[in-house]
Image 1 (cartoon, one colour):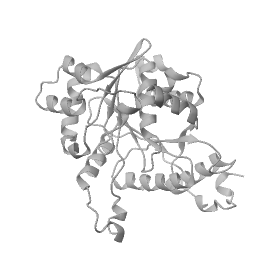
Image 2: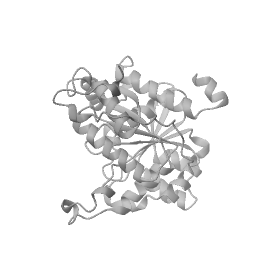
Image 3: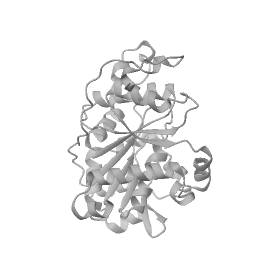
Amino acid sequence: MTLLGTRPRGRRAHLALVSDTDTVSARHENISRFPINVISCWGPAGSPGKSTIASNLACEMALLGQRVLLVDLDTLSPALAIALGLVDTPAGLSACLRLAEQSRLTVDEYERLTVSIQLGRNELRFMPGLNSPSRWPEVTIERLEQLLDCIESEVDQVVFDLPQATQFRTNLNHPSAMNQPIDLGRDQLLVNLLRQSSKLVMVSGCDPVSAHRFLAAQEYLEESGSNLNPYTVINRFRTSALGSKAKAELEETYLTLAKIRIDAYIPDEPENIDRALLNGLPLALLKRSSPARQAISDLARQLLLDSASGDALAKLS
């Protein structure tokens, strides 16, 4: 008996809607105007762990021999520097955008304004985000294109940590939102970033509330007009919030309601994640045998394989 032929029972029956569903469309790519392959990490409200996934994905790609730039593009609440244990960081994004716009962003300036994170024999470069959410208008698609143009010869992969959306179009007329300021400009920047990313990793939590929020974010993605078919990641996967058949329930729900398949499950390892935050280290350097680290490593390899060709593909295979 297939999952879609099994009616959910119990107090969580509301999580899944059982009905016939069309075949999930094959993954297709956006035509990116960015000169470098850009992988964006995004998720709904509620801290599903997108920043953790973004930083560890970037580390894993660097360990696979890629020249990777991790950019904190969370214009609402940039926090990657804290997660990476960095206290005194350079100006990063704002300064690089300004110099790129003036055609003055050299390799030396790029290296001065970013942080080098050593991963054994490999290196990850990190670009800190804005020091205040009010400065988000400094970030535009045009300036980002100019920035990436300037460093194209220095970088193979760029990983963006994106902010959550501040408004959903379907909720704009809800009475509770009538008296709230609507930051449509910031959301339009997010939509443009989603449209122009080469690949999108959408991060969901592993409980009924997270599933509900994720489906709302998926609806927002569809409304944005992006033709990206995201890589769906269930972070902190465990059975305590959904029961022993948690994986089956999540797969059925997302397939039925959003016609998407789940690409990766990141096991819940609070002790290792907390130790990584305490020490400002990626999982790969803290505990290489960690199941969560292995799952993120597999996802990083898949993302690279899906965009590689020729000699690069042979090295990753």
